[in-house]
Length: 206
Image (cartoon, rainbow, N blue to C red):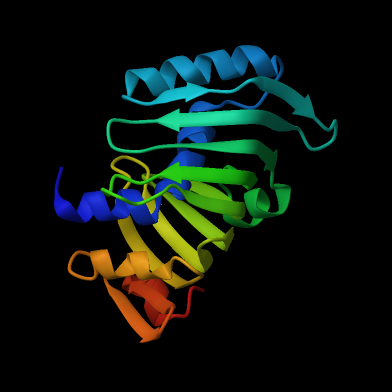
């Protein structure tokens, strides 16, 4: 795996984590059956997905609640104590594309770095709009040992970062130093970084 992709897996594992089961998970009747199909689809693409509990939530705005969700690939693994996914009608109407809101709670990510303890996050929140060949991540907010805010565009085919306007801080922001050679990271001051790429960086994420 190329160094750039390796860096993206670290910085954006949570986005890939979110995208993975969102792409595989079809909303509709039979939430548990849909999750079973999602697990099989993920397995075919090299991901292991598991959850201790899956349930539907809401009547007018269908959503799903998953407890103790685990995602594992050949490079990284992580889990979330609770994941909530819900449809976003406003974005669906304005963007004319499938859109959801996502909240992950009590997240831990095992890093592929010798001597580094797992990364712990209190919450991850974002809106995701699924367009042809890409996923727009809007209003991203991550809190915990890393604090991240901003927006990004990911390739839904390869998971690569196409555009970004992210501010990164937190007690473990020093991890960003490891990836300055493969990602457009800039240290604004001690403990504060920005990651900007493409049109999104030029227009402030709009």
